[in-house]
Length: 366
Image 1 (cartoon, helix red, strand yellow):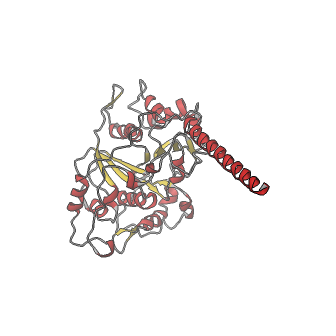
Image 2 (cartoon, rainbow, N blue to C red):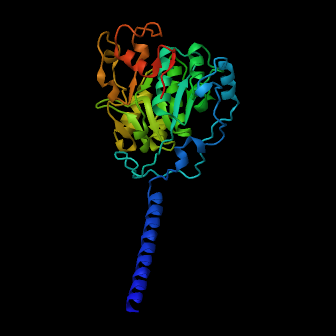
Image 3 (cartoon, one colour):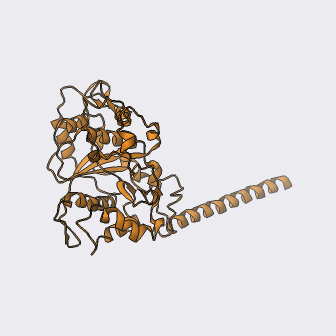
């Protein structure tokens, strides 16, 4: 009888201890959600839970390969017919006060959604390197959605059609119409830099609306940026340099996005190429409050790498150690095509071959 009572007492004690531990765990979870660290739910990173998207596009071929009779026009209409992606409602601002942008979120979740953004003002056609850059982002990031923000009615040309025929591309792509800004806070953008300055401003607004990964049209993604999606915002900011705008990863409510846009107020200089995009926000905000971002040195490839990418007969093997590389397409002389990129041997040739299959003329995917 004594043994029976002892066992019952032990069982009651174990049960009580379990209740106490459960209470402490629930309390700690609630505290973590209220202490400035945003709650990131599973549906922020799972494509299937994002709203307003139909079933995947069927290519109709054996084994999932494209049907040769399928026309790009049919895929284009499929893309245009779907309802636009709606960012998740956020009625309450996330409180990033005190958030550690050195270590980032430690729960295993992500802050920045897995969305990739390109911006194409006044650009109707894709050239070969544009095509390669999109393939790299599609392959290496495997985004839930891949956006082209543009002010042109429709893309056209051989490389756009190749993208449309890339298996899986139509399932994630969305084309979003945006107006080309003519002013910022009442200050006109009316000289030769308008398109570029408008792009600087619009990328901030895109990230404030959607969050995710913004890439310049000549920023080649070497590997997934998921590591940096755990931070409030990650930017390429090399030692003794201003920040680079070519690769950005951000939560839509990242504090630096708002402050960056505000640096234009009453201080836009339409005659300086990079003053408002990089110099002013670095000096006025990041020098004073570097904790607003996760600083990435060199690995986003926003520094000058022309001599490593395009020099004939020399391969830079460390390119694979990068997360991204800005190709500086407009600053080198050769116009690359499917016919001429193989010779001479260059680093850019190896980068192209990582995502492009010259035998098929299409994507080298997973």
